[in-house]
Image (cartoon, rainbow, N blue to C red):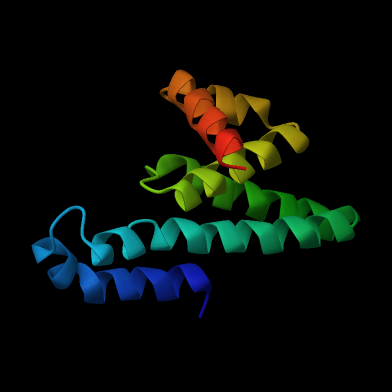
Length: 122
């Protein structure tokens, strides 16, 4: 079972507890970007494999990275860890020549601001 599926199942199981938890509670903060962090790990793994692969396998992995990156970019980050995941997805898009994918984001100014925030955390 992939990390993103495990996280999604965990999020479903935790939904009742999180729904009743105060917004600023430790539980809400700890689990806010769980699925996003899992997608980030999936992207890191696929990207590493993509860089090591060649030919047809490399292209398959590029398509997999794009699929994961699109999922990441579609989710709102609520924590610094979530912003870091989004920054890695944007970095992958630029390194893979997928700049149009990033340019299609509904709010590119917000993404740029998020990246500045992530860089300030580093």
